[in-house]
Amino acid sequence: MKEWLIIGGGIQGITLACYLKETLKVHAKQLTIIDPHKKPLTMWKHCTENVGMNYLRSPSIHHLEPQAFGLEAFIKKQKIKKEDAFVRPYDRPLLSLFNQHSDKLVEKFEIESSWVEDRVCGLSKTSFGWNVQLKSGKEMTSKRVVIAIGLGEHPLWPEWATDLKEKGAEVHHVFEESFLTNTTFNKSIVIGGGISAVQVALKISQQSTEKVHLATRHPLRTKQFDSHPGWLGPKYMRAFIKEESIEKRRDKIKQARNRGSIPIELRAKIRRFEGEGRVHSFVSELNTSHFDGELVHLTFKDGTVWSGKQIILATGFHSTAPGMDWLNQTINSRHLQCHTCGYPILDDHSLKWDDQLFVMGALAELSLGPVARNISGARRGAEKIIRAAY
Ligand SMILES: Cc1cc2nc3c(=O)[nH]c(=O)nc-3n(C[C@H](O)[C@H](O)[C@H](O)COP(=O)(O)OP(=O)(O)OC[C@H]3O[C@@H](n4cnc5c(N)ncnc54)[C@H](O)[C@@H]3O)c2cc1C
Image (tube, rainbow, N blue to C red):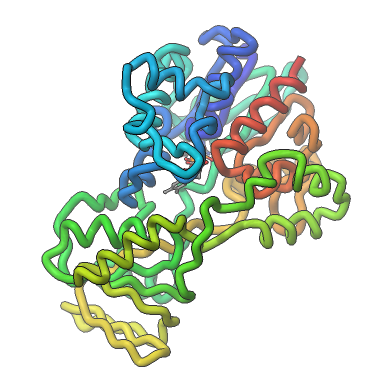
């Protein structure tokens, strides 16, 4: 029987694996990570590359290993100048170097020898720990289980876009695994008003034969981070944890998230591209959509009419709790607590949901606050789980 089994090998699951290896010296044989992809961090690499992100939005101390300055030390060791690795403000790392550092950790901690390419579809309690049922029909047992599944597999599709796709129009979501943006585009429109929408519009405009359109529902909002840095520490988290009403915590998370916002330098870049005639952005809500068999025709409430070939959605992820298709049975049989929004109610200190069952990442946001889904949330989650386990 394994000591630890992590469901999901994204940023969250791999951060925990690094912490287990470094802090608790957990042996590869005592750890299993189950994920349907061939390699760790597949969704992270796909999403960030597909939007054309060059630098992370988060600062250099947010990475996957326990030592706060691990990424800086890695860059120093490679003799890369700091100014070539990080961008101001807040020393945000180049995505390629962040990924190299993450790959190095995967190699150093032999994470792939704990990797099982499969999908969890059931979880049941036994007298010694947990039994995990896999899509392949196999079963695995472990003393402890950590659910770290994230939202990566749940891109949000507006209903009108699904309808158009069903009628044969070329509609993609930038986070769809089968859709790659490193190709040539023509007559395209990007739908969305956040950082991913702006990044992808910039990316495809460099590969497009024609001007790329960007439709946003609101004027571009500038915010450096996706939530106030006060959420990274006790400044805001102390009051959040003291709040006993889960409903109020949910409201606080909603208010704290700078949804649909972009850092100021990205706004400057999109304005430059607009000035050069490569991008045309406008603010309006969709009114009607129609596919004539060759072109898609969209009309917007401000009177804008767009006809073209490709619609690229950058409309983010579903806000509903992921994994409930297979977790519901465990929730019912073990009487696990969930809020009305569907998200687990955990022990705030340990992220425990049941005996030796832990949750991190998006599903732990009612305990970890608005940064739960981010790299800093992964670090906070890993620290809590490790502290609680011994
Ligand atoms: C474009 C983009 C840029 C971002 N930039 C930053 C940034 O700069 N800084 C920052 O802090 N955060 C950033 N984030 C937010 C966050 O860090 C990422 O979304 C991150 O990928 C979340 O990691 P995760 O492990 O929760 O989810 P995922 O990356 O989705 O990984 C979860 C894994 O679990 C697997 N899985 C799901 N269900 C099952 C199952 N039943 N059985 C087994 N495996 C399963 C999935 O297939 C997937 O591989 C960014 C997000 C995006 C989309």
